[in-house]
Image 1 (cartoon, rainbow, N blue to C red):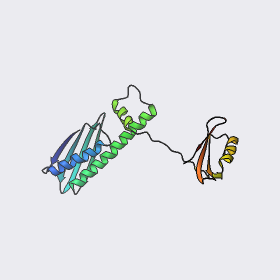
Image 2 (image 1 turned 30 degrees about the vertical axis):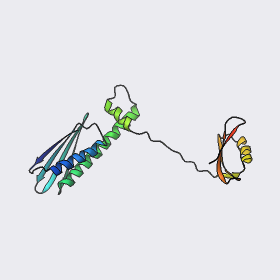
Image 3 (image 1 turned 90 degrees about the horizontal axis):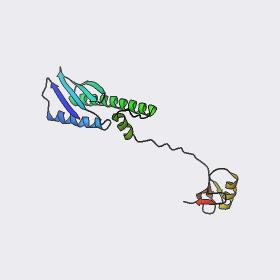
Image 4 (image 1 turned 180 degrees about the vertical axis):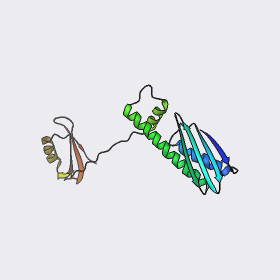
Length: 175
């Protein structure tokens, strides 16, 4: 990523230059295909204005901010840019999920999808375990069509799971 800084009506300090470079590294965690960023810093009438132009493949973004302090103006412009990048990334990801990746989809779309971690969904089912012996559990389990039976073992006072292996064989899971 190439960073260009233009200062109007004041001298650019190394501290401001370093701060801008550090702020731009934050943007790369959201989007790695940034080609270049151009900052235009202006001091007019005691107000600090920042104009930020960002180039990514197939898109250009612009954000502006004006504050009393130059650092606050930079932060505000970068925050606005983050929101634009997140929105773009979301659109690309949603589009690719709806349409599926095709051969003519550009490498940028593919890279974005590969970096997204698939979300795992966990369904929680709360049950009340009946207190019974292992033999009572086997008798009850033979009557049901469920693949497993969870019960509280009356002998050990612990939760057990009875699983059907085949017609006449069961597996008892104890913690």
